[in-house]
Length: 212
Length: 370
View (cartoon, each protein chain N blue to C red):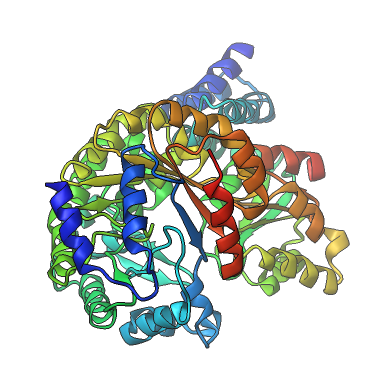
């Protein structure tokens, strides 16, 4: 089993989608459990990708092709996981706050969180506080991720948190924030539960806050 | 020849808003040469000052109304004039209007659509399928190109003695390709379709010189200098090369796809100031500095964890040691520490200030900086 998992992991880290698919299929054919493929092959591989990204060895293109390879592998085992009572690591709604149309950072966070086993509800850009509230109510999300790239749209993060609080939903969700102008100090000031400077660290933060 | 250009232009430019114009230009030119006359040049900035002059809340406008607001040439020039009314410009703060439809306007010249926000615009990816690239055609009847022409013309008619008119923000490199394709999609393309990326990058540069020359000619015909959003004029041809997309990619990819365009776009310019958009771009500095026509850098210290400037002094000293002039963006609160730590040679300071007296006090302070 170890040999198959090692090959799967290597293929994901190298961003090799075809090899990932071949090796996941080979592992299944050799009766390796789908849960093991997920938890000991695919997810650890994305953790390694995050480590390489933080260490400056990988950049966004490498992270993206690894995540794509991971997803291709995941798609093969998904039907087998359905009956295995595997729950996502958590449910996350992501969005760039109202007035801001930048989405690179938000999308990367979504890709990395998905790679770590979270279910993602991407609300898009220019997202009003009401839409975040609706996502909490409709999808029972555990975590909200707010993104902003502009200093002019940063205050909308605070407005969104206030709106969630006023709607009586604050205790149901953790809220993390990110974006170029954001700091931990700002996160503390506006009552967010955390801040992450990049997608890899956002994933770690999400695991710390709500990971199951 | 450059001296003759300087003398000729000096006779032509007189700004009631900036009585020390000649001396300011001399300081700028000394800085270009990594020299210093009496003090480093300094620019006092008020980001988006013209937007603050707006009477309506742009956020409340519909998508189409926002575009109309940005496209309203009379309003745009009026707002700029209102923002400088009664102001006197100190140091090397040149009153410059540049026609602005956002940083992706160059991509829009080829057919991409822009979506307008409150302070900037965003391009809507145009090349969804590779066949779409065939539709990327620059022509002078493009609505964005025409609008930049109208904005320029309108400003030229109203600038006499009050302000300089510049040209718009032109990004012919990977930033343009990213605007056409979407930045994350372009990241995949670097691995999946490198030949198509090269093709788009070539397309993005094809008409650059024509476009630059077109607006340069419009400005020069009216005795203007060469200046853009940085507000640093040249009597020759000023350009601000940049590659914000490079923050996302490795040095290998930048060297392969970004550097060749940078080498070309800087060739015909008298002065190139590379816009280093924070530490993500700075990892490519070795390659950027290998381009012989880069005359100076603008170090954007950024916000968030990139603030304050004092954490970047070692980097700035390294640039000084290389003889590379650098624009340094700092806050008034950091000025004393910065002056205590740094030598002034090769630096061009940018500071956001609240009032004229503060600017005059800072000028006195930096006159003593040796």
